[in-house]
Image 1 (cartoon, rainbow, N blue to C red):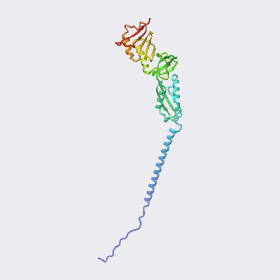
Image 2: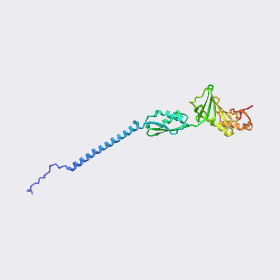
Image 3: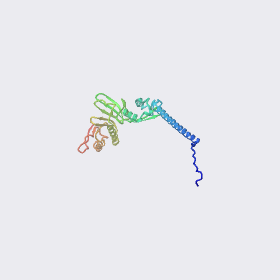
Image 4: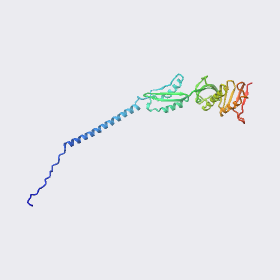
Length: 284
């Protein structure tokens, strides 16, 4: 039992060799990672370069600078105002088309030219601004009689003088009496008062079947006188409804036969106790 020899364990103390395949695989992964990073860096640099080039072309090069303003609806009748609008937009020549805000230009033109009702400015790439506009209609001839001078104008629907020393026989005639000559750069007649005058004229012609040859407007007296084709005048107070004033005349037609009798004037401005008072003067 005690005679058997004792076995002593042996240990392999030599280092285990590292696999050659593992080294190769690690090298490949590392190389692929570096290549991927280089590709991403190149792609990013390329994108940044392209964006920078686009930004330069769009905003800093002269390629998209405005070279011309074009009036799309130019014709013989609006040639003068077309030239004026183009002249007002001349300061935008040479500016970058992307930096232009067309709404700001539209507002500027409308504020500068009260005769314009609408305007549309659009960009025509790469070099042009296209403009289309419409004017307020011309509604009346104005004859201004002042203590200094007598002048004539044609005014538009907003009351501004569009043409000077001209007349259109197809439009109503309004004489305006003032102490000083009117300023054509301001409204010759305030828009609300102009509407009153023209509406009163149309109302009388429609309801009484008699044409109005001429209108006299006295701003200080706030008085309107409609000169009829039978050469008498209807006097109105511009501060009161013309419908109500004409209603008095309608009721008095039996007594005042405006179609056969000759009158100098019929004054509808004065209100009596019943509201139907009329002052008139027959022609002798």
